[in-house]
Image 1 (cartoon, rainbow, N blue to C red):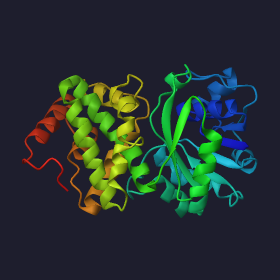
Image 2 (cartoon, rainbow, N blue to C red; image 1 turned 135 degrees about the horizontal axis):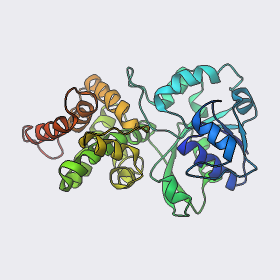
Image 3 (spheres, rainbow, N blue to C red; image 1 turned 90 degrees about the vertical axis):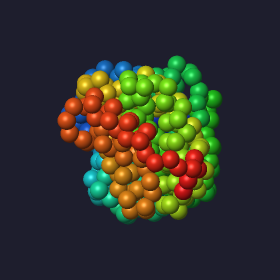
Length: 324
């Protein structure tokens, strides 16, 4: 299969490495001048993987799009809409698009598959690939489980069949709304976990329980299956997001609570704003999300703000555990 992976950062480079090992003809694309691309071009490797010589590395977007049967996109979620405006300049009606990224568009609250559809891609040609796992573990041969979801049942089955291996066990997702919202929302909970690691570690258990319940309410209000919040895309990804030293979102929260700055991408920051917007739109109570939004975007001393937001959560009125 001819596959182009657009984006050669952390996940993009791993996906190219992984799919090439399965025997696919892989092209890895990155923008010229981008540090991630330049490092791979000059050295053939980055801090995560060494690209096999069979992988074609290019900064020519047209070439990457035109030559592919399947286009995997792994970039910052907030850049997806603008990126798709570039992609659809080329003939793509016969291409399959796989989104290996997690996020919700700020300002609109749109899921990433919705952005592709609004860009002119048929929903029948769109799939998402999400779930737990860190590249650092995968390249050491440590396996994990992930999910592929799509409105197109046949596409979902075909991709799982072709992408599965002893390293990644795939499951079929059956709720695209829940899969996408759950995958994005776990990054918000990761930031909260990082704050708790500094201020009050024992609260991670309640965070896991209340966080999943909060996301379940939102998924249900949006028309998805609330049980999706307890699947691999969300709760199943908590270990790698809430506890791992490799988690960018957890590290962002930890450093924020220490009054320091985390310089790498933490998708949960923008996602907290998008989820807050969705909570207001659908009338869903999202207290943890709102607290994360406040610590990420509030003014004043970061450490004091983190402590204050945790205090606010404890001062909330008492509710039934499974309230709607």
